[in-house]
Length: 100
Image (spheres, helix red, strand yellow):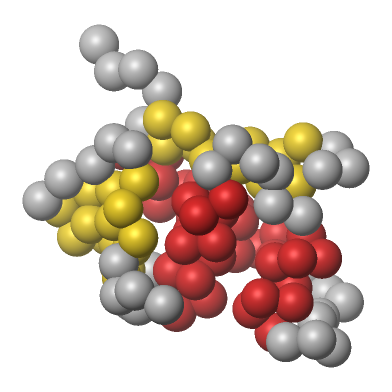
């Protein structure tokens, strides 16, 4: 897996953070991996079960840890005009809103 994942726009992920333009955004390893997965999925919603398998292996986790990490990521990305969207029954996607 590459060290950074490019995304249309100006965000790149790294093992312990992201770069948005030239600004470093510190992330936990779980947040960074989660962001990589969502970006790599593109416009295809990424399901919670797939995220659990990718993050925690075949056993997955049956807790709210995914939702907590998503919530933290949303808070960190919002000032940079990125949003993580949840589509019920399908999964998560990311987009960037237009800036004025």
